[in-house]
Length: 289
Image (tube, rainbow, N blue to C red; front, side, top):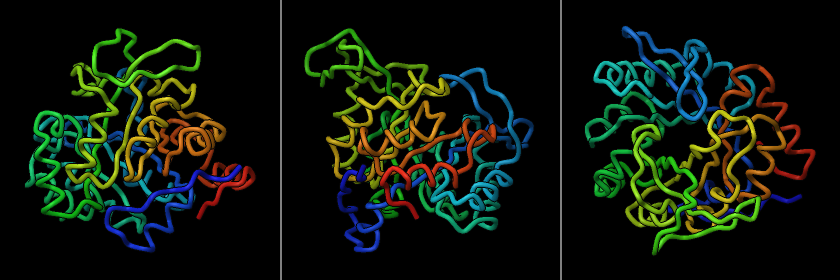
């Protein structure tokens, strides 16, 4: 199989455009801060979190395995957590050379600046973008689109309402994809596909959609969601939520059309290394770095 053709970055950088022809693997580290101490955690559908270890140690491990990028998501949602994540970003920047994104609870231009100044390559914004879409525009203007990722948590909704994009699912049923915020706890009534189109227009340089239905389930990505978003926008899209095997990651590219594939538990638990996944992708016709 050949990887689906990529589309040019907003920035127009020829090197970045060419790099979209490569399938990228992105380990994700959800970080929870307790008493000032950050720890990587993993749960199922955003709950039942289990502590895994030090985020900087994980970052080093994944760079050694050949990860293309890293994503750190602060799920603490507290002022203490914000300050600690700035320190985590600084320590990670000192420890690894690969690009990394920090997201979770960042809701202001000042908050974005602090994370970028600490050494992060990109900042991810999620709930704050839904509450204040102009934050996306302001951030892109202040720091450049290539440094702003909009994370979108979405779930399937079989209750069809007027004006939404409806898709046929694997079992023949029909649903639309609804944006949810605050870690999946609050539905918004917003069509995820239209939301992705909107944040692209506002200046988002990348989109990171996570399926709330699949997160932590180990049954594979929500491919209809991934494909719908990839078909709707021109900026890079990272598949997220549910991967547990190299085949799942392969499908993110060959079926979903993603530019990058994010995974957590399968790497944290040591079931696969990034290198093993890349070997599998290469054996199935994809180009990897």
